[in-house]
Length: 238
Ligand code: C5P
Image 1 (cartoon, rainbow, N blue to C red):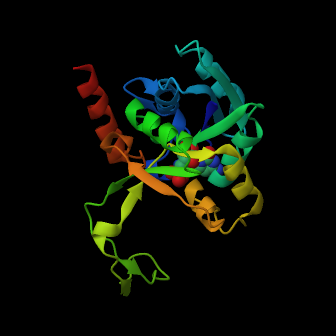
Image 2 (spheres, rainbow, N blue to C red; image 1 turned 120 degrees about the vertical axis):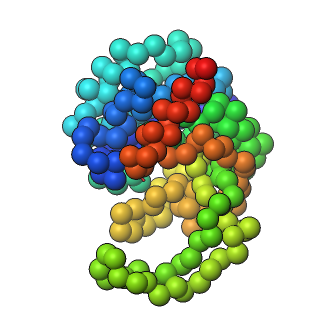
């Protein structure tokens, strides 16, 4: 049984502010993408890491990987991504060689996920779950609203789901490879596409399970997240 990790890293990261594509921004001097690649390669279960680069940035990402130390027992591939996250994941799946039966999909934007979380996801897939998602309970209460036509206008509340039943999902999400490929082949693209791979497997009617996520697997989205990520790295080094 061989496991590969696909890292979609082709997003612009506009919410982070102007600058380089998000995955190429530095955290304590090392690009976020390199942290994410190392986080996947840290798992002994992962034998191949496929990085999905911005469509015009594959050469730059290849150079980046060559310039940083990475485990020798792991293989690395770089492929160009698409206009949506879903298309980028698809490009990564299409690049997988024969012999892989389990795949992790991991956002470059979650550079600090601990290896224990990665291993727990792989283990749950190998134990028979077709799709596994690490997730955490929510601190905030969540409300569903009728989105306002214009930013800043009051929005009517439609519903308040029971907080104790909600989970905020992270990555890496783990899949039986054949199941995830089937989901990509059959689930229709809508709007900006799926923001979550497991959701596509749910649409096939297959079971998806949640395992405990980790605080440090948070997504670097806004400028404040960069501050938090650098603080986590500093604490690890201390
Ligand atoms: O935009 P969002 O934060 O949801 O992106 C999640 C992950 O998907 C990021 O790692 C981003 O680089 C990646 N992505 C991609 N191709 C796109 C859009 C996003 O690989 N077209």
